[in-house]
Image (cartoon, one colour):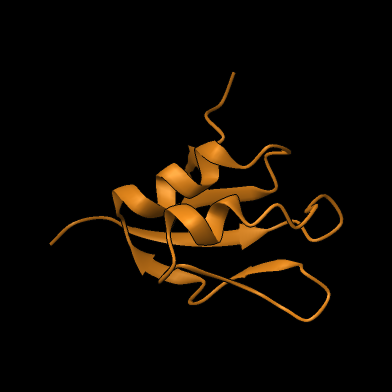
Length: 77
């Protein structure tokens, strides 16, 4: 069994670029205010969700390992 992730979107940072929806259409949704949110905050680790986080122009998406809280994205400095 692979890693499970906890995915969060900082809605105070999100600018509604929809890059996350473009890269991971099953992973993110935009609400009526064009704010992103994860379709499911707890998900299996997958490349499309990681690509979505990496493509966010304001780094509003935070991914941590479920359970340990270890950062996946953005990586620790």
